[in-house]
Length: 184
Image 1 (cartoon, rainbow, N blue to C red):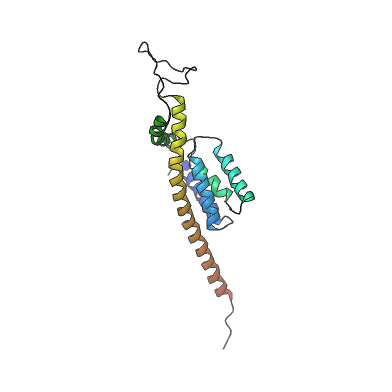
Image 2 (tube, helix red, strand yellow):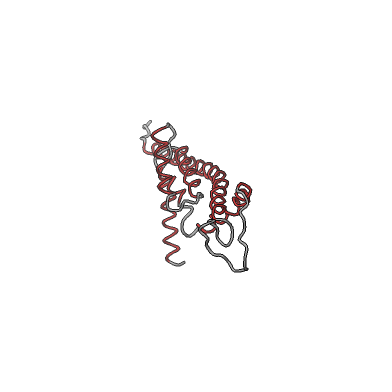
C-alpha cells in the first residue's frame, strides 16, 4: 500500500479511538456526532466547524443537554474539500424541486442564443437562478441532515455504549485477577 493510505488509515484510527475514549456518556457523544453531521450538510463551508462548536457549547451552558464538542467536530469533517462536491450535489438534487416550487417563476432572458453569463440585475446565471440554487442547497441540506443526524446518533450511541461496556468488563476482570485468593 502507498504511504498516503497508511497515514490516512492511521489518522482515521486515532480519531475513532479518541471518539470512543472521550469523556462523557454515550448520549453526549452521540448528540455531538448528530449535531456535527447535521452541520456538515448545510451549505456553509468554512463555518460548519465553528458553528457546531458554538452550538454545542451554547447547549452545554444554557440547558442541561450536554454534547461532545470532539464528536461534533468529527461529524463536521465528514464533509471536507474532497467530499464537498458530491455532498452538495446531492443536497442540490434533493432540494431543487422544492425550491423551484417555493420561488416565483423568473422571466427567462430573451434574445439571441448566446449565453448571458452572470447578470447582476436579476441575480441569474445562464442556468438556474442563484436564489433557487442557494435555497435548493439549504433545503436539501436540511432534508438530508435530519435523517443523517438521526442515523449518526444511533450508530454512535451503540458504538460508544459497546466500547464502554467492554472496557468496564475488562476492568472488572483485571480487578478479579489481581485480588488475592485466601489460602485454605
